[in-house]
Length: 121
Image (cartoon, rainbow, N blue to C red):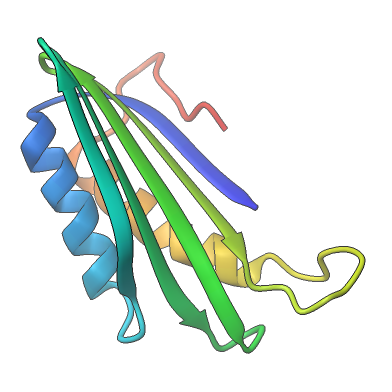
């Protein structure tokens, strides 16, 4: 499992669109598996699940993306898992890390980390 979490200030729809586009364009084998959206007043939550093929492990890797927002205060959580073909324990997490890294790099390009701010994981 690989995880990236970050607080952001921005437009909820723009950040969600950036994440979806980045994941889908980051790999020829990426696919959108499903999602969910809920809103209650100013609070919004979007959950997205993606998969892609990992050539390193020869299996599929999933990425679960959750975006929570109240106004322009946002929290992004992205967790990648899968990709190992081991029976009892994971032998590699390269596919997970690579899947997540594409998203992390683009988010930080568009929303640079400010002084005193950092990843949660």
